[in-house]
Length: 82
Image 1 (tube, one colour):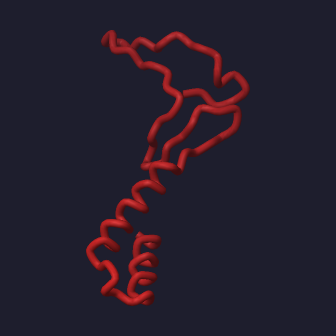
Image 2 (cartoon, helix red, strand yellow):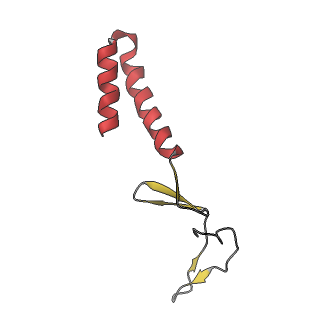
């Protein structure tokens, strides 16, 4: 992955000592954050948002309309802190 003014230029793949090939990618995951190849430093948060909504909908689907607004906001607050 490349970041900078020449991020869109194609490069040859890197060959390791044991004939493995490292390919160039447009996006990679490092410590749970997706970094994107761009002219400036960029992160892709769509995967994090998707996981957040998936977990909130799973909890809210179990609780449903039985819980009060205070309980739902408490669950939401708990998900944000985790």
